[in-house]
Image (cartoon, rainbow, N blue to C red; front, side, top):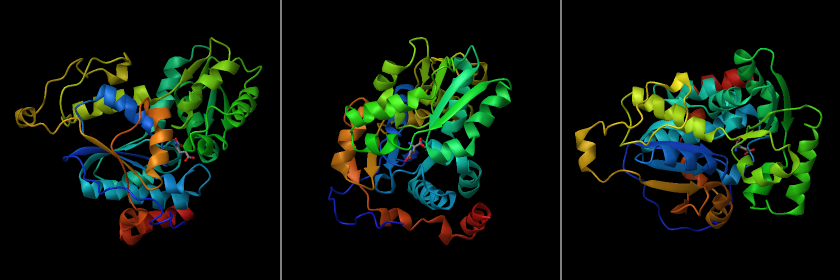
Length: 333
Ligand code: DGL
């Protein structure tokens, strides 16, 4: 794996928000589209976001590489005080969720893939659904399997989009290249009469305006992030692990009922503290580029952003533990 250009970029020393926090990660800026919705839904939580920009894109990496990268970041977040891992990467969620959960147990690990499946199922009326994702996610067929568990007759059209992530990482969404790439992908849906297009990669919301130009106005473009935030909010609520008040729910899915529309601060001690709603963004790549491209997904410039040298994370490689090595063996079998 690459050395990630150690010392190429410099940023000030970071300090993490108070524990416990939610640890959120993705290959780069993509997961910021997820974090933005979490901040709407769970504004009292503290967050540490890791964008592994120096290893992006994840979408054409092998499961063994993804296990090492995703496992290292997850274990690093756990060590630093995460109370749960929020996977903001469909590629890892679709291929390695069982292994990452086993590696991190008993720490909860949330899967965006499960949210994407439910968001698409709730959106479609015709059961004709388009799914766009990275090559690894598409090949795993995890979305297709998940959707068919709920809608066995669903007509699904899955398309891999390897060109998108590098464009979004570089902030090149308002370019001819991006417009052409989106047009090409949309051509796969012509004549399919889809009523829902599921964005199966967290980088893709940056391209929604381009998709709108090529899809029929009745097609719902589904970004699972809002449903995901609701799903995690419901789970944290049930586990009595919420940190602060949360606003009213947007989803009326029965699976998520039981979540009061406005929960109380659970611990009186928490109510006294100001340790709420703190966040930090860390990137293993160029933090200036991260800010620029990240704004496209986050809705504003993410702040504060710091660079973390990947060597700091690599120390937590799952391959240096017996459990991780056993899991890695199963993956490469
Ligand atoms: N944004 C991630 C996903 O949802 C990773 C994309 C990539 O790095 O290829 O799959």
